[in-house]
Length: 248
Image (cartoon, rainbow, N blue to C red):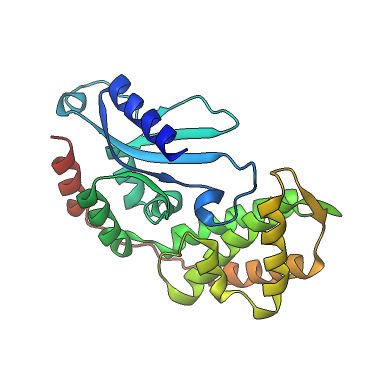
């Protein structure tokens, strides 16, 4: 699949006359709890040639392929990505930590990763992860039978919130790293969830788990109380330098 994905990326470069600076896996295969039939969620950052940016007209800032059961491939134009990075966009910060990388300009990736602590906003990230956790909890985990993957999704985003509360830093992308801060008595239950997900499919369901539901509910309340009310003052110039460097 890696070779197929890389060829798809090369085809996009030719079709849209772009250069891909970074491409990675962004979903369950990167988080560490893929199912047997999980698709490949590929995300990338790309740049056009300089003439693209010398126009009075608004330009499209997303490139994507039609989604199918196996592949979901889309990317953000560099200026869009840098603007979102400045806002501490949580998915973008995850991409830059992905353990599965398909393409990477070493200089670009190194510069972006080095700037993550400088632009990271605990408030923005907490709002993102709390909103995701609450949405999953209320819509997908309220019944007697629930989809297995929704527990994994809710725990990952909840643990990201807890990581921010505990460390005031960018949370890791990978679930195994995040779960280091999880309450120890849940480890056996979570291990069982991960084993079931690895051999099941995306539609696998299980009986609701009261212990996990109680933990999610309890920790969401703690995280809500801990959300910072202050943002992060940022200096645009480091990102402007990256933008100017890579549009040549």
